[in-house]
Image (tube, rainbow, N blue to C red; front, side, top):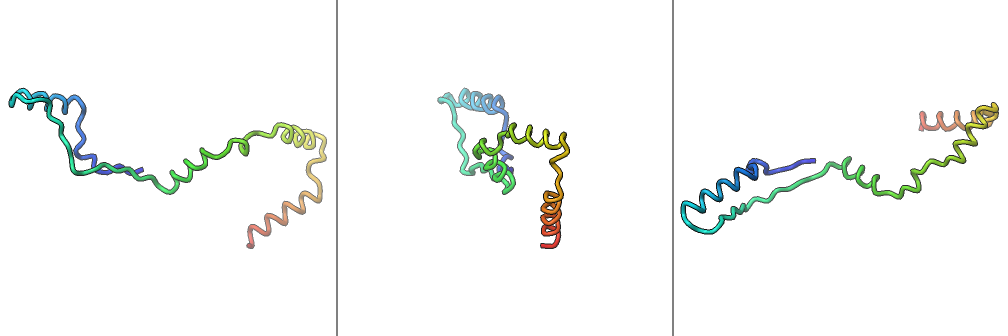
Length: 99
């Protein structure tokens, strides 16, 4: 995040004190300072991407406890790791490494 044109920022109490003092000296109503320069804020691409991720549907991020419990049971029973699953995992790993 980038904030620009912050050199003119003063604390609220300082600004109010200056306005009151100026108004009392010339015996006019409150003075409203305006500036021709506008403040701006810009966000990095990563910040925008993270913002978009937080807005996505939470359905896709819910924990599927039925699946987790089934896999735990298979691991405990010794049936989760099969030669077929290992072949698929190795093929995927090799494809990622050499693609």
